[in-house]
Length: 451
Image (tube, helix red, strand yellow):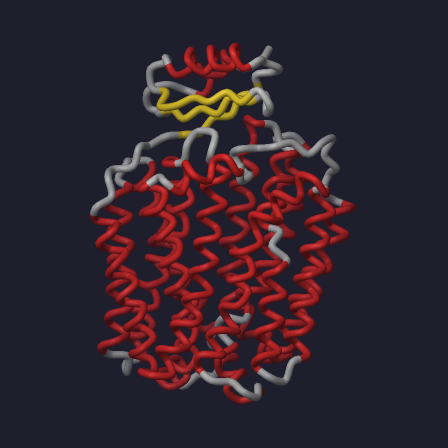
């Protein structure tokens, strides 16, 4: 990437990841805080508070992205960050659980994820788009891991209201980064690789493989949200640690899960063993949930089971976006990712609600019983998946073409050995190509780019 592209990718990654950092820091510490300090707190309202932002995100992220085409990318991101900060302040000042529910829902109303990705696409050349997206994707993963360690530490210093206040500050700090550091695009354009396109929804929603992966991310984050209803009390009762010390468990557990995740991803992608790795990761999730239903009295066992859970979680978190990219239509990746992200946020919402309900009825075993059912359903769905096609996506700038010339160019590209699919969109002046990198190469296909 050139300097402008790198500046865009890293500045937008910082805005994206710091916002996610604030959201995730609440997970490990909120349940116990709510039980002792918020009026009206019950297991189900605590779960609703944890999941409320997911509902708003799921409902609004695609509309936010579409609105940015008309209103402007930076303006919509700034509005979203302000909304997010307002929600954080409402949650910080609330003495009741319902005030936090409202605050969390407002937080989710700042649904800027799709707009950030669209702005990133405006600022990068087609051939460098995947690199800049990788920077943003890695920053989100790092934010999640840092949040599980930083949340308990900050809770010991400033408490949960303080974490909400820090979250508001991080959101507001993103605005000067947006206007002072992130470059200004020459124009906002449509990017089918990063943005939802209304006419593609029917195709994407009708694709069975994409629905399979959408259920996967829904199930993954439903289990995660539900688990954090029970984990704080479980760590306290089993290991005798308070929420301020939870980082001492999460730090080594996440480190171990990362060590096992890396070779699993290499096997899945480089050795083309995606299906067995995928099924194995879902099986790890199911094993961890069932173990916590049956027996959660041993501290050593609990730490091992958490390492198993987060290994499966991290493998899926890294694999599912890749699978969506492989399975999506060449010119429908952005739409497929939009539906996928909405499914993820619905999973957070429903996982929080179901987890709270189950905790109120069956305690820790009830929560992980729900997780076991979700994981078992997912395992059945995963076992029936076909071997994914190992397709890479290539974007080529093809210059101005009329419909006839675009169709002719698409046919020529699709005739190349190793090309699965090609779509040339005259309005975008881009060719969207899916190809097998073991049969043909991006360098070879670059012959079809505009001179």
